[in-house]
Amino acid sequence: MTTVLNHLRYRPSHEWIEPGKPIAAVGITDHAQAELTDIVFVDLPAIGRQVKAGDPVAVVESVKAASDIYAPVSGEIVGVNEALNGNPGLINTDPFTEGWIFQIAPSNPTEPDTLLDAEAYRAHIA
Amino acid sequence: MTENLQRSPLHQDHLTLGARLVPFAGWEMPVQYSGLMAEHHAVRQTVGVFDISHMGQVIVSGPGAAAFLNHALTNDISRLAPGHGHYTLLLNDHGGVIDDLIAYRTGESEFFLVINAARITEDWAQLTTLHAAAPVDAALVELANLSPACAGLAIQGPKSRAVFATLFGPDATYPEKNTVISCDTPEGLMWLCGTGYTGEDGFEFFMPAPTASDWFQRTVTAVQAEGGLPCGLGARDTLRLEMGYPLNGNDLSPDHTPLQAGLGFFVALNKEHFIGQNALLQEKTAGLTRKLTGFRMTGTAPPPRPHYPVLSAEGQPLGEICSGTLSPTLQYGIGMAYLPPTHTTPGTPLQIEIRGKTYPAEVTKKPFHRPQ
Picture 1 (cartoon, rainbow over the protein chains, first blue to last red):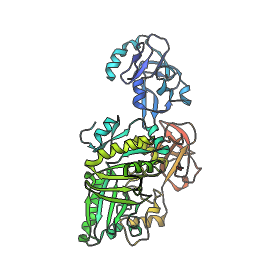
Picture 2: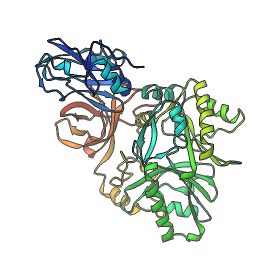
Picture 3: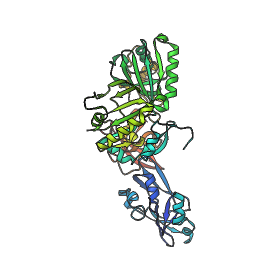
Picture 4: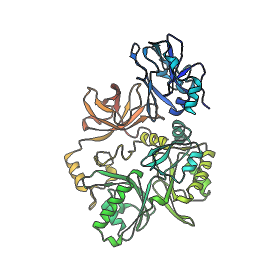
């Protein structure tokens, strides 16, 4: 069974975000990393980029395919996980902590709360 | 999943093994079971079994069969002794590739052709058209398309012989490289072929579709006992690309000749006559304008993939990638592209454009990897 963490919010396209934070980490879910299989490259976004919810902002690549990662909320990209450049497999081994992809400062601090909660996301991937 | 995809006779076995199925060449086939990387390494280090039931089989027989095939195919089939097979190509009149295939001589006047799944219709049309046009007396040649009735397994990797002994007994004759053994069993004909698409020792095994599930289950058990894995088309693609083997539809098409693809070794240009010969002779005289060229990424970069633009070091567009991947064995990006002769010497710097950014690469010799 794949892990879904209760304190996070989820986009149906399998990104997670920390709610209630001025600077929120974003990554992909355990379910998504299992579907993508061995991740071999991550294209990180530029820091300072203004994005709208739903914009493709990063690319996660397995041997077989390149998959877009979408901004779960609107805001500014304020950090990226440089560790993924040397070790993209962190997304497979630890998708919710070491494998975070970027940090976003949401334009509207309550926008993450409008996303799926853990229960709704579990139903979404069931 | 699209409705009209064909299913392998092993479909249920794949589901039982937890395979992820994808559309490929009109078929619903496993792209992976446990994971592409693990499956790739299994074939390089121990052994893997692939379902190749999507591939097509044609039998050409009769006193005129050799002459007919020498007219239809590029390699010189008269040099093929019974019990042996070789790689060859089916061309159109312009020298473009309809298909690449293996022709096995199963008897003095009987040949077994293994053709690509995506080209069965085109190959059959070309062969029957040539047959009707009768360069040799049509009554002396019989064609049979066995594709729907046949299933196939490929066992590949250094432990293939151990798997063979488990399946057929320690005294059974192993099909050595490029040989074929055909067996008439109570269930129907079977062919054991010393060929593969990975660069490793191994064999391919074609059998009547109703017997396939039983053979597959026994093979998976034997493969697992040697530390190997059932493998999907994902690993099949990375394994073949590490060897620089072309994939029909990616690297071979009617728009390119075998000379451009670097397959001149499999074209007997000076034999009496074959379809596409004039075009190839002209091209050889005029000089090649494009050549299928291997390259490797030289720095940190996303995996190269088909259709990404290939540029010179100065940024001049040269072509696009036909096949590309991250090599699981080498751990860097490799690929092939049709490039002008000015950019085919190993070491020549190139750039690959990926999502609007360019990444450094260089021309490299094929194969990219040499199995031990």
